Length: 231
View 1 (tube, one colour):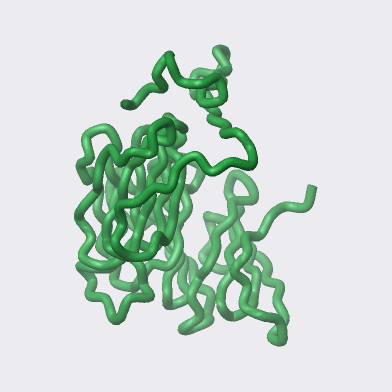
View 2 (tube, helix red, strand yellow):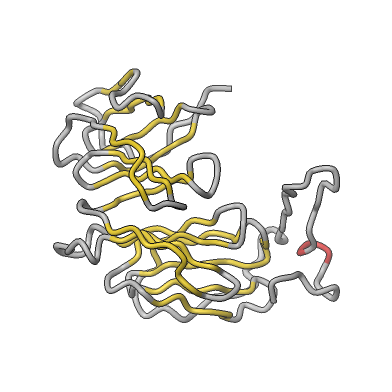
């Protein structure tokens, strides 16, 4: 099931750049029609993403603490990832055959064992890496490759992790207690932006633990949308 069948319609086929060894397969769907309704979670679905290396596969995460792998060709579940004891807030896909799940910080008071980020091998369904965090994570973003991860926290702090060694590389302090980080957006090779409930957009350099710049107005609503570079 990891490959698109030859019998699949043309709009499900890969588009590959043969000169690019990393490859960027694309999978498009017809517009304006609902092909499948995916049913299998027994609580709210909180996040979905396509598996980047195989875009005919979709991963969903739920408040039921499970993530599921689906085929967009058949609408059938292929695998269930079980390992979290509380709801999953976010699911991410890297450029390989791995997905990352982040436990929700909005379900009561979580212990350190419940404040987890896990990396899963999609093909075999096994957890390959687990981070146990002292503070509840709210959002995560791969930092340019699958070995480094930016994590925003309920406390308003940001962390940069080495997933391969499971070590903390750097802690970024926003000096804004109890203002959860909501979004992380990459802006360049070393720069990124974060937004949070304190209504401030902060610009960071990965080598510096304090923000390069921050912009915000106290009278605006909470910022949940991602930041982006103006074209």
